[in-house]
Length: 206
Image (cartoon, rainbow, N blue to C red; front, side, top):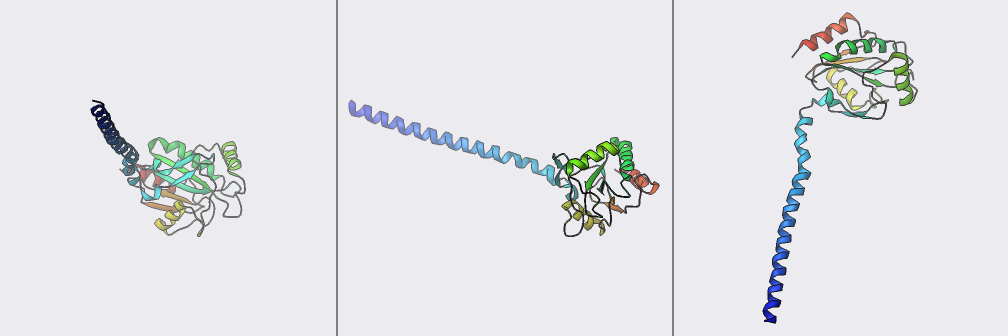
């Protein structure tokens, strides 16, 4: 009887071990599925136009995924605080306020590339924009926009238009498709009939 009991205990141990292995395998499969789940989000990024499929930080250091602006008409502009064109902040804010509810956004990229006219820190730039021009449109942390140093967004804009900024406040106008891009030099005012007319055309396009 003692021998039978020992065999029974041994068999029960084997069965328990096998069951645990099976459960472990199931658990592993569930864990693997859970890990793989985020890949289901990939199509969202894949649907984002390549030009906007960029990640930066704001002047305040917050992550900014430009895919959030897919489907909008976008103005991208390199800015500076001590430039003859700095007053254009006012016009940029005006058109942003006027059209933002229609699917429009302005994104500013402060850069110290031209005339060393943006020498301050991100905090100083943010303070200047808020205090002087009440800027509410998105502003990205300081960057560079010139050949050999340009961030990926401006490199993509160059490839799309064959034009690089030659000075501060060069403006690129991107259509809702995230692919069609127009380039406007620093002397083109944000509120000029030429610029506003193109914005309205793109906003009207479906």
